[in-house]
Length: 297
Length: 46
Picture 1 (tube, rainbow over the protein chains, first blue to last red):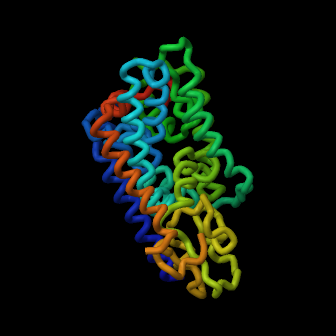
Picture 2: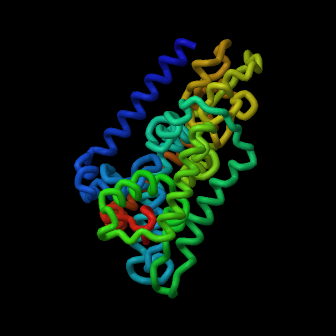
Picture 3: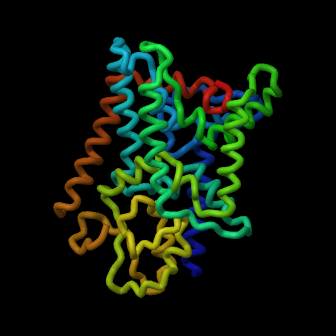
């Protein structure tokens, strides 16, 4: 277990490093304003609201919604072609790490993943998330990120709404809504029923982090759905050898609660490598697809 | 190089090409315009 502890510390340092690197505009927290530099045209590989005061990159989920809900995207306007190309560019950047190693960015880069990892360390009763709930994130991706923003428009040529951001996203509420509302003090922001709804959702989801392993990643995250699907064809996959003794330790240490010997090609796996370090018989490994002895995943 | 590695390699190349083409030929400022202004929907106001 010593090597697992060392690995966990290393992973935490990497997560904190990415958190710092993508949140360089610390003055935003003091000023109650957000960063407006040109770096915000590029997405962070993770879920992080672009209205978080310190964020210097954009949220991939929010950006996808803003493009597909733009007036020209389906309306036949001249801006539609440029918007579609921007969406292709954005998706290319977002999917690139997933084609290399599946949901690896969930393990090492995503700020919301780090928050979940840290909050699960709080001593509390543990709740297992039913496997069938995993489908929720695909509903979020298809319905709230793609279909509703694209199709639901008040008038045909008007823009739509980013429905995932608007009614679900707890990252936006907790990392942008609450700090900006607190700083504003009700002077300019009109806080109504929507703020109340989003705050309730965010509070419930944040409380869930204490009791279950990464519930947002597994049940609600549309980015996790996209990366999980793309990861099925990734270059680096998981392999479990015949030495496996089915002890279940891999599931105990797994941040997303999967038993890798039973589902080595799981779309839930975030490729964090903790099961590799915990395995008492060294049966689990990351295996590049070009290796000829590749057996699983 | 095995056959299994071919598909991921093609996908990685396609994603990289899409990113380059999209950002060079499209209007990536559409992403910036949204990201550089306070997203009212995200914070629960819009």
